[in-house]
Length: 146
Ligand SMILES: [Zn+2]
Image (tube, rainbow, N blue to C red; front, top):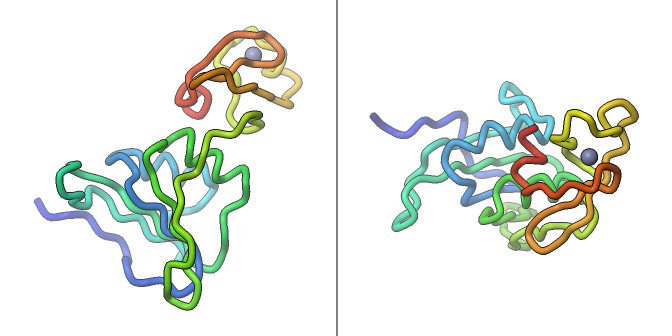
């Protein structure tokens, strides 16, 4: 079985998210609200990543990521690197950091008031997040996958 490739080509302006753990590329695409059918988006699945095994790579051309979207990347794929591309060159490369206050994702506690009222807010404590409303602690991954 060869690698699965969908319209992968070098982009001139945009963002390349590299080192996404294999299998998480599609979730990330969905959470970022991108359609895999969009011609501005290319998802490379199960690419070889040397000693680290397999990885997914997501390329989004023609736009940058907002702070919220970078939070999503850091939650779902803490090891991912974000490359900002301008004029066909990588102008910035960084690993998005977990934010101190998180306003994306939803509280996994089914009885939490945010289920009814929305307005989720989670405060970082170590490597976990505490829901401001029900005060339970959750791992970053629980928040984005619930
Ligand atoms: Zn809650």
